[in-house]
Image (tube, rainbow, N blue to C red; front, side, top):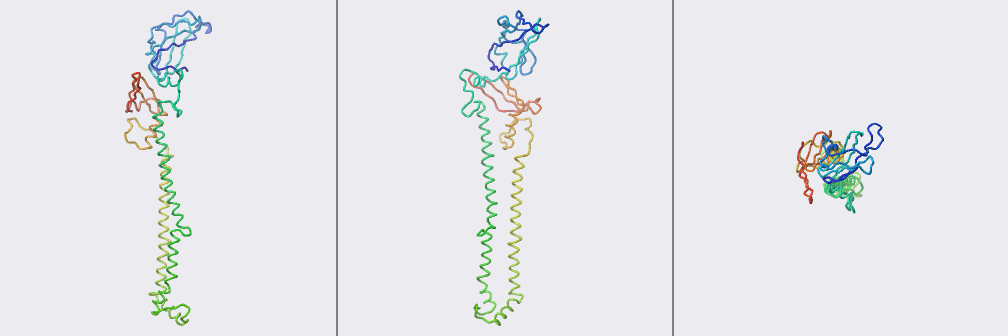
Length: 328
């Protein structure tokens, strides 16, 4: 398929015109006038070409030079050129009409084609939007996940030697090992000296310790409370934290991988979330779109209803596309 520049006069070579009977013999003497050449722009109804010049035979061959004017090529999209002249079989040719700026970037003499980033110049704004999305989902999200991992690693460190929990246990051991003598002194009523008092004294102290009020029973109660707090309650809190992190990570994962439908017909909101912005970009990348000299249309998934549209204009110096509005 050949490419034509929008709203630009051009000569095309139309043919081959061959004998309607044998389908082989070149028909070089036909009259291929304006009314004989019909055009269909973007699948619309066939109408005769605007240029009034008749098509001239090219060197007694089956081909004819056919002139098209700026009106004939004014619509971006497919352009079907057909001619059915008496004595010859029908001829049909298809072209693709593209925006002037795109055509010039790719086909004119010394055309740059693409900018330094490997993009057609008109796509720079779209690429900038995509870069912003990649920055947010790549940098910001990674930072959040890194912070979560840091928190979970900190919790794991609490269980290691010299970790926060180990330090608390060491403090308990220090307290029960260092200040126990003081408790025995309180029970005895006088100073308790290790390696000095007799077994009788010790037995007396044991009786006092085992009196069920302030002795071993009280210690056992206190130890049980400590074990409950460090064994059950703390474990429960850590389990709650772990469950919360699992839930949050699962929600983040589901949000990223769950399929979503395309945005409905209507003007895109000024303040959309990241997911909706990505959906609008994907819809514009995937769905059928058409553009005339005055309007850009983006269709729904069925390619039959215009969901979004905007006005376009070109004064010869500046191409302007208006804000996207609702279709149809």
